Length: 469
Image (cartoon, rainbow, N blue to C red; front, top):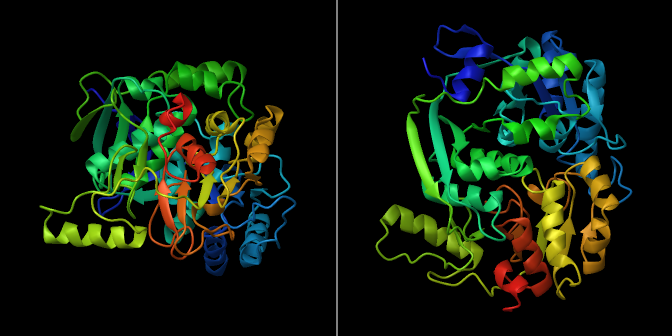
């Protein structure tokens, strides 16, 4: 029987079915972070249980460490206790920590792929909703809560109801300055922030195949913002070339065996999905969110929506979002002043993201009154960027060049906007107060963010680069 990519991975990892109908799915590897793991470690210790496979478990310090140069665990005092507890719990359980002085330190969703820790056809769990990022390698990943994490650490399985299957076919070709972030935001705007609920999403079509691996990781990263817990892009020659030679990737005869297995994973012809969606990307513009939900998004040439004709419930939601964002119905976003720009996070802090932004910034200066921060997604990304001279491009333009961390994405490390500030951010979410109390966040890709930084306002990067501004 024809099977989907998702079916093949899921079925290969099912250990048993519970009486409540949930499957017990084996987890190949998991990466923890300091916001949730210390509590799970404490619960395990209280119950007298150990981590079942410490050799398959890894700890990252990413949410609370400061991004300031020369930082240590005390620079952000609010995170010090969590960092120390993470170290202690990891040591007690024999788990490797990607600590602040580790050359492989970084955001868990960036470090795991770049090391070859996560591979096609594998399962992966992280106590963070953006675990789905690594679906860009053709892996099956799930975010989990603290209670689930305790169960996974003790048993190496996760209990889940098998999701329905959705395929989103991305047709056409992307135009200039249109990237994976724009595709993801377009999808969320199209299906809504709950449109993927109860489904595992496979991204297919010419656009998905043409994306580099880093773009596929960005696309899958935002799957959770569609209401789905996991998303995948089938591994292909682009994936295999990207993985080859990475530190933890298979070598020699093991690589040959793995490659042969990975090539059997793509969805079979004739496989059935519960939901099929097609999106034509030929005329896709750079996207920007106008509201406080990733689904409240328009093309850069667009306007805040007109409220006429909306039902009362949706109208109330939109009115609330506009009030928070300081917008009026029908208002153009282009031209609005920008106070802060952030380039980073598990969505857009990989080397190609920094290269794209640097290409906009080269020879330009951050506009007066704009605070601009860029934070590489890992120590390796930072070293590679510096080897290419990208740090100098950012610094010369007037950006702060930070140390690897989640940073302003959730504001847990002290990097925040101020009340009323308009922030252009390459991150995952734009909910109220996420990037600082009263901060107004617009989600964009790196190039749109860079263009705003040097002009001091929301602009169409295509106009900037064509000389039309």
